[in-house]
Amino acid sequence: MYLVTSILGSIDDPQFHDDLHRLEHAGHLEWLILPRADLARRRLRAATDKGSEIAIALPRDVGLFDRALLVQESDLAVAVRVEAERWLRLRPRDQATALALGYHAGNLHWRVRFDGDLLLVALERPYNSYVERLSEFLDDGSIAIEESADEKREPSG
Image 1: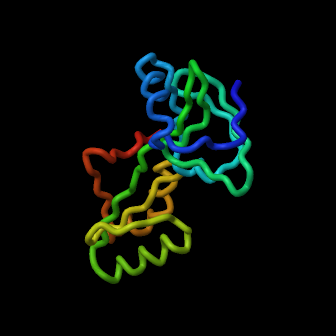
Image 2: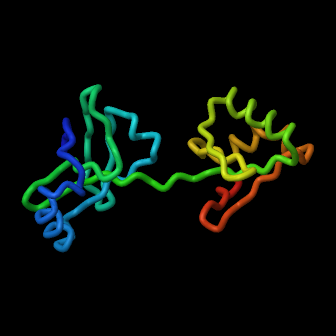
Image 3: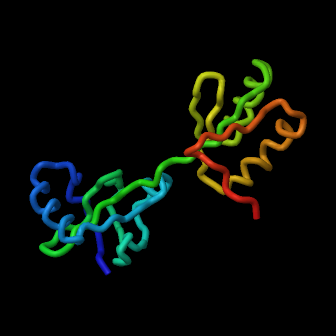
């Protein structure tokens, strides 16, 4: 198990380029794939995409970030890769519903963004928990959930 107590830098930093290039071609660059929500954590245990165990214990003033270099040795490098964010895409039927939906999302402290007349809610919990919280809007047809090709719903169950 590797214990990480500091971040070496970014894999994009020029001083790491040659070594990381060599390690990547040898198959010795491993990725610690984390959900975006885990970037705020200072302590965690996880495994890389190749199964190496990593324990992270960072000081309070140090934060994880996408492409952070955690381990660099002659035969291994480990870097962070953040999972792609998933968004629930909501289309309100009218402005009054949009206002009510925005108020509702704010009260629930959901992280949101806007895409034209859509309200996008970051999926940080199971999909069904969002649908349950939106049931009054969905049941009366005042909002619709839209799907894009790259953001599919989780299966029920």
